[in-house]
Length: 262
Image (cartoon, rainbow, N blue to C red; front, side, top):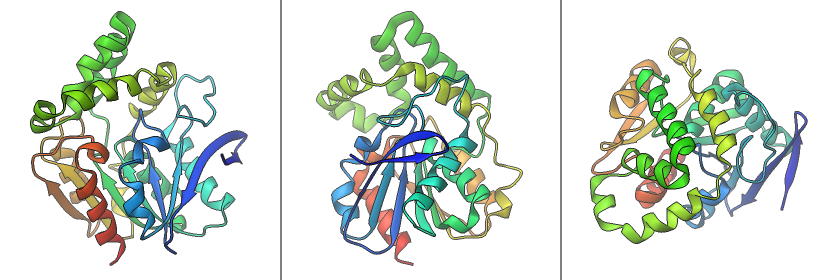
């Protein structure tokens, strides 16, 4: 499978689709490119679809570090576009990827044609930092079982939790395959995130998507992004939690296609 050499790192990426418009999907914190599986077939019909694993994710390098900085990950994404000879892309960032997408647009504005921010933060406030610390502590004290038990209520809506016990068990298996030492470095990078001072400088079409039961990157954060980014749109999905690419994959795809067609 393809790898690019970017800033001294071996970066895994995937490219597929039948469209002309490049669409770059940016992963959530414990995701890899595999995490987009439910959405890929529909998106391939409309876009030249790109996915990558960030530092510390999937098949990209997991270099030792105290933290993986969001700015470093943003430069990695810009480097992939350059590697592929793509001048500009429509960028969709989910959760962690939405934070990276903000920095990508700020640092490399000419690389991004439009931006969809899904279930993400304008800044890592004290609540978010404490959540990250609780996940790290749970892992150290109880491994996968405790870590997963603590994280699940933050990720899914009440409706999803009550009706998908089998899927939750399958997702736990996938969670056990994650390099948790690398995730800790990713979490430490998130703690430094604060784009509030420069979001007003973004000059491109921006669509913000959030579930109204998102407890991890809650509605007040989406409203803050909406307030600070000029002319941004805000879409709220009723009865949906944080993990949009699983819980609300069809609605997420519709939003991406609709916004990309404008």
